[in-house]
Amino acid sequence: MSEFWLISAPGDRENLQALERMNTVTSKSNLSYNTKFAIPDFKVGTLDSLVGLSDELGKLDTFAESLIRRMAQSVVEVMEDSKGKAQEHLLANGGLKEKMKCLKIDLTSFVTHFEWDMAKYPAKQPLVSVVDTIAKQLAQIETDLKSRTAAYNTLKTNLENLEKKSMGNLFTRTLSDIVSKEDFVLGSEYLITLLVIVPKPNYSQWQKTYESLSDMVVPRSTKLITEDKEGGLFTVTLFRKVIEDFKSKARENKFTVREFYYDEKEIKREREEMARLLSDKKQQYQTSCVALKKGSSTFPDHKVKVTPLGNPDRPAAGQSDRERESEGEGEGPLLRWLKVNFSEAFIAWIHIKALRVFVESVLRYGLPVNFQAVLLQPHKKSSAKRLREVLNSVFRHLDEVAATSILDASVEIPGLQLSNQDYFPYVYFHIDLSLLD
Image (tube, rainbow, N blue to C red; front, side):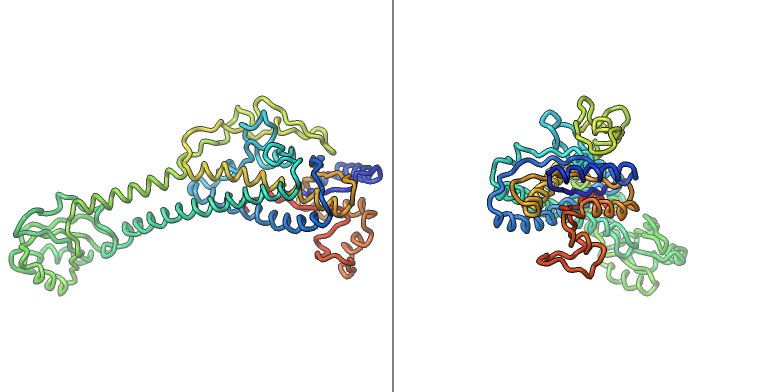
């Protein structure tokens, strides 16, 4: 599953034993895989400031998740015909140890092997400063995302408008991609070539009568250029001074003269515009250079260390079955930007989760700071209810009223503003990596 539960409990002996009991039950019942989730020691500040940060982090968490989901969807939209490969581009590159910055880290591996980025978000800074740094980073990414996607959507709209001109029937579609210079008499002071739409049932009538629809029609000057399911496009050459008379007689016989005059410069301009837009759109994506390929490990030379609470046989990220080809040079600018900044936003989002656990744990369990954060990955969606029951039972002693209220929704928790469904005896946050659902 791509779902994780990030919880914390006090770090005293009694609660560490409770964590071990939880781990034993969940492991034996195959409910979840559990690992310790390392969070650095931050400068706590005042409890009043933590209360304010708790609210701010909640909003920032929601904003960050919304942003990465929008970016994931943008990857899908840019890839179009290769939408099925979009997940391959949603990575947390450079998110682990310094020596692994150049490697490709899938989202699950990043979360299960999370390490706080001290260089980007120094833990020695006040918490307010750390949160502000992340907030500004995400705000800038969102601004750039809006700008780049707006430009891409404008490009798509312009291209679609041109493509619409090449669709439809002979009465409405552009003819610049159908006709050629050889179809027309050009540069003549007296003669002109018209294009006439003739219904299919009237082909024979046209051939018999077009020369007599008006005076001064050039004999044997008609030619079928193209046709659709309704009719055909014919040329006819005549003297300029009888154009209006010919049009009138043609209408009477259910033949329609298209208002089209061959302008080589205009046709060339329209064709070049279409080619340019197609090229620009293609260059925003081009061919994916991060394709699944057997033979090269996700972590070719390194093994990521992790402190497991549960199954010791679970492979570390360096033993992952997922394998990718090294990155090439053929990606378009928009896809490349989305990949890089999705990774940055996702990494920031998980750091926000860590901050929320820290702040809520201090507010819940008090000072001095002493708690243990644990990441649980439920094995199956159907096991979530049972897993929740185990957690509530193991940590019931932390808040008897809350534990009771989970089973009895009619019991109110004094002073608590959240709905009972969102509150548990332990600190709890949810992480959902199903970003394309």
